[in-house]
Amino acid sequence: MGKHRGLPPLYTREAYIGPGEALLASLRFLDRDFEPHTHDFFEMECILSGRGTHLLNGTGQPLSAGSIYLLTPADVHAVRVEEPLRYYG
Image 1 (spheres, rainbow, N blue to C red):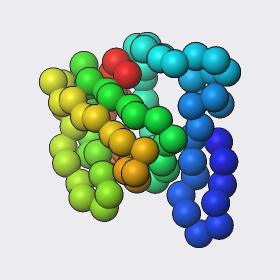
Image 2: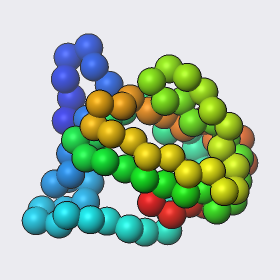
Image 3: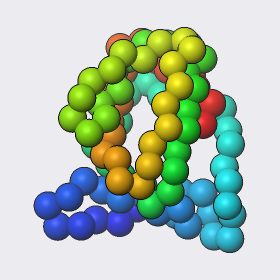
């Protein structure tokens, strides 16, 4: 994860996915809020269970089973958890 003065943390492909890897797909769990951040890669996630709010570029959208979102490297996002989330990303 990199830091840029005045900007949210940046998660790099190499640190987040692994050196030399192009794709990471896994089942994940989130039981706490995830603060605003960006990526230098695209990210797609599908919510399997739980509830929360996805904050994308300052706009909140509800998250629940069946929600899917795709993020670009230009997006800033965060997650507010209301009920622990299980998701595939």
